[in-house]
Every structure is written in C-alpha cells, then in structure tokens.
Length: 200
Image (cartoon, rainbow, N blue to C red; front, side, top):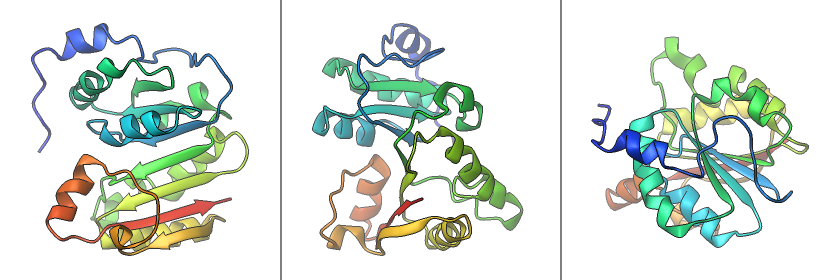
C-alpha cells in the first residue's frame, strides 16, 4: 500500500536546494554513485556522510517518499548528495555517460511472470543502465526476495555481467554494508539479506 502524501510535501520539495530538475551540478569531477529507488533516504544519506569524495544521487519515483528523505537529509547540508524525483526510465538524457556505480536496494520484486520486464534487473533496465555508465559498469544489489535474487543473477549473467561478490546472508559476511530502512526491518524479522556486486 502506497503511503499517504505528507501535508508539507510540496513545501519540502519546493524549498529543497539539492533537488535536481534539469542538470547535474556537483562542484567537482568525483565519481558518481546513484541509488535507484532510495526510499526514505537512510542508505544514500549515510553513504554520502561516509564517503565525502564520492558524489551521490538518490532517485525516487514517488514524491511523497522523496519528501521524507529530503527532510532527513536537509540538516546535514551535504555538498556530495543530490536528489532526483523521477522514474529512472526517463533519466537517460540527464545521466548519460556520467555514472560509476548503481545501487539497487530492495527493489519491487514484481513476482508475477507477466511483470518480469518491470523488475529493475530485467534486460530492458540493464540496457538503459549501460547508457548511463561512464566507463566500467558496476551494479550492487541487495534484496530479501529469493525469487528476485535468482532472476537477477540469471539476468546479469545473460547480459554479460561478471559476479565479483555474492552473499546469501549478507549480515553474516565480512562485507562493508550500510543498511536501508527495509533492511533493518527485515533483519529484525530474521530474514536473510541477499547481496551481489557485478561488473562489466
């Protein structure tokens, strides 16, 4: 069920000075990492705080969710973190040949077979990502969903990606990790988190 619009959503978004609407304007040429489907912003905020020499963009389709992330991020006044409110499928022109790493955290699994093309690791999305990458292609995915993880691994391999790191129980591995809001919830419920890093 989609969350209700916060009463101050429009005010929060209109007053956000790190919201990207037309061009990317980081004041440097540092590597660019993007999270597709940033949710309430916990992951992308902490990544930016811990990695000041990397630029980050959080992409969120739903403005109601993005406004919550914006309120969380605003007090930190981070020069290396921006937000885009849009469907990633519409961002080719803005992000073409600019991205170094893509994070896919707890994406909608779209469990029905007829919706397979809507999964963010399906071929049509991987083809889009290839246009966004600057050079080497790096995708890092986390999910609680076994079926999506299997689908993603098959899709990565079929589309020429090499698995660099993989875990079926991320929190019991020695892999650097910053948790999302969903991840914290699932972990408390005892659900194992699946993780993969692929390159091309």
